[in-house]
Image (cartoon, rainbow, N blue to C red; front, side, top):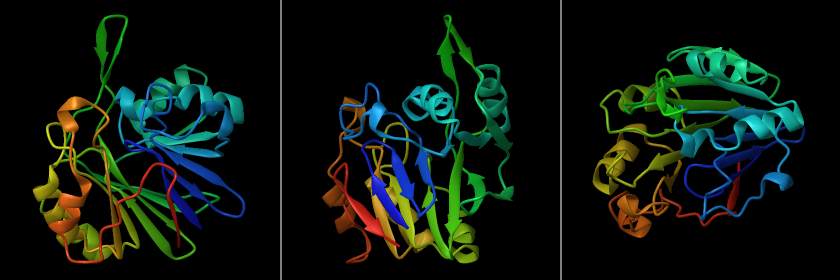
Length: 225
């Protein structure tokens, strides 16, 4: 399994048979190395309903007949847009063709603007993806919470994607404590530098964690699990 980072919160998971995109914010994302026309996901996973995470979901899902996995409210809304979806809720897990997905809690908001109104997008979530015995955790947008200890204890994590941008999510100091709680084998900082309020030095975050645990990835970098 190959897992790659593509700027902001965009993560791609590739297996022998499937391509999975998490939070495919490509158009308008100045940090990403991806182009919409160059990706062909079978599955799209969404942490929550903000535009910088939903991104190009509708276009990609329709073009590639991809199944979108997300919370129930967003799955209903995207279904109205003609997208094939599978709705879930926090604490729930489900086995898909590529592996198992479980949603965890995340402390954040969710919703997006449409026709001058804010559309509620359900509860934000973190996502545990387990494929062939390896587990990737995408924390989504969240503040620090103590139940991360339970997530880490109950679900041994090989690779965790952790927001560090502050302002909208955890900052580096809280994110470092999140890594301690989750105790993944490897942690990657995400959700920083995209906009002025979330400018951060990822190497400072790395310095706050146990040596060797954090890998700062440039857009396009990958790891094999």
